[in-house]
Image (tube, rainbow, N blue to C red; front, side, top):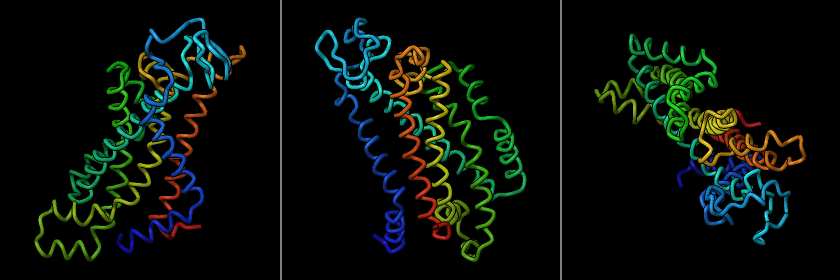
Length: 290
């Protein structure tokens, strides 16, 4: 491991909240990856469900003798199993949409900052237009036009996110292109693509990494909101937002666990991601250390 990488790792490990967040996030990722193996029931297999097991409180035993650790929902689904399935979907949506949004936005911002002129004006005005609209409103319109589904939700979240990365990258490139190492590379007549990818991109990447880390939690929350409103993922697709929505109507009738446990899972995911993002900010920018 190189010296700067070792120093960055040491700074990260000195952050108690960052380590706690990383451990929690790793545990959640493992649960999501191994969910199908760990879940005692496939909650989306109608043959495995029994309506007589509906709304059973945590720790109850069903008619088949199966014990429901976190209880069941209104369809008789084991909540622990449903959360494991939904956790995977929520993480896939967050990671996929953020990765694609980061790639598109960073690429357009890099191009705009380097080329300047009309290219910068067009890309930045499009980004300004995107950022002027509420993210939830844009996602609602896009999904209403395209229809519910995993792919459409990811696409909508990508279109919501790219503008922030583009504007951030453009600002970073405009500052970096005035530095001596960029002038030296240009003086050697290196191709513009090589200067952008080999010199500018690595020096502009740290702030974008921090921004993207926090944005994963935002994307997961936005997907949960859309699914809660009934226009995100279909009922046949597991999602933490859908699980919360399914039990919301029964929250005040005493069946609190149907919404509370999926909501707690969503809270832990977003909390872990935000803790890691905050620690990365301090790690990649030592001047920000408390």
